[in-house]
Image (cartoon, rainbow, N blue to C red; front, side, top):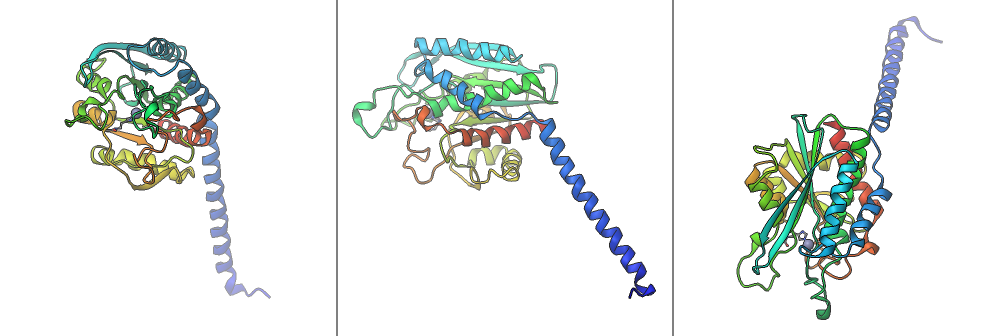
Length: 328
Ligand code: AHN
Ligand code: ZN
């Protein structure tokens, strides 16, 4: 039988239990609202954006495929409502070749002062110099993963932003001439022979005094089972952005892709955005400690094709970015 002296305790217990229930249901409501209010990233759509780029052929500067793809990328950004700048420049490659390069920039909500920069390179490498077969090494890379994947993810994000703008302004830059770097057997230290488009943009921003709160670079974001480690140049210049993105990825259940461990220090477009523009910028780049190059087995080989593009990887990267952007 219930003794009256226990009554206050039982009442207290009831109150506590009820409160727990209420906060649990509030939590579910919050995540449901989040699900409803954030657009959902379509990996199928990103896949098609990659396929279209690859269909032009290798996007090597000074080729027809390159010119046609530039027109396609500008047209898509405009279709999704961006203000588009095509920044053309003649850039000198390590071997003296003059590259007719173009950085393609799309601005969403251009009057908003809080801005985030999203970038990827859109050119492809003129040589498969890491191919195990010597006879393949003079061919250009198809660049499905190396180049087209980052741009594909960004075009899908552009499509979603066009339909439902986030509160921040977004600038997308598709950098040219990232992948014309000197092959490893070149005698001198040629670190700055890579990333020519981003070096040019950082020295000549499309708007005077351009600022963004931070930047995110995507490079090789579509290989099956890809792993993205916390890249060291990103950690040095933008540790809080690395933390924010990796934390969001873990929360969404993508911890197998976004490995919470230190990776390599990689010369990529973000280095120049950090060093020259002073905008803290991270790099989400495939890092595979098992492979010889560190960038996966298809890197700079004839196998960087659509067969090695994986929608599950695209989904992990795209969804993480959507959550980061719409929470700002
Ligand atoms: C270097 O190999 C020095 N950096 C890699 C940058 C890169 C090439 N990203 C894609 N292709
Ligand atoms: Zn490359």
